[in-house]
Length: 242
Image (cartoon, rainbow, N blue to C red):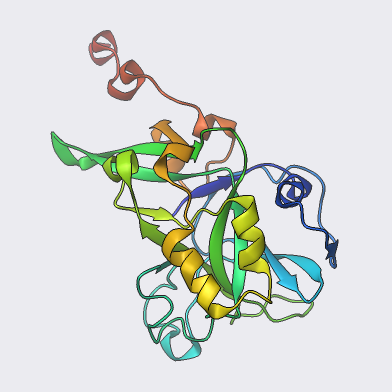
């Protein structure tokens, strides 16, 4: 999974799709989030369950344990195959389970004729509904952001047609499975099974090429997720003669 995704609905919209009969224990804005180009190291909303309540918090996308800080950029993803057994994410598994709500994510495909040129694609749900990425997070409660805090999105091997876009995809959970993932009462064994088999299949998604403006982290706006035609991608011959 490449390092960009979108989340442009209101947080209330994502929470309603989860259908959780829990009190939201902290405030959040009911206005659309309008984040069409979420990039690594930016602070973005995630959902956690704390006891019998839900907490919505803005947390940095990217996390490292204290002993790895400064050695390299904080990873933004954790591979499903090693996240439960590796040393790196030991401090997050299994109690740091969280959800990163989204509407879609971006991948870049190299041009067969010129590998230095890459075409971005946008992947979103086939039914238009929101997505819930399985995540792991560390969050310290306080007025100011804590430098130790962050989250990573779990990624799994891509399947079927998605393999043509990228060999990895985020661990996208259906709402009923997402509720299990959040629940502190879900056993580590069940959470491990969700990582291994709970990802929504490729037929649940659709994907299409989009403009290259998404490559600039400063760009935001709905035009970033609008499809482009083959003509748009390669330009008109007449344009080259101007």
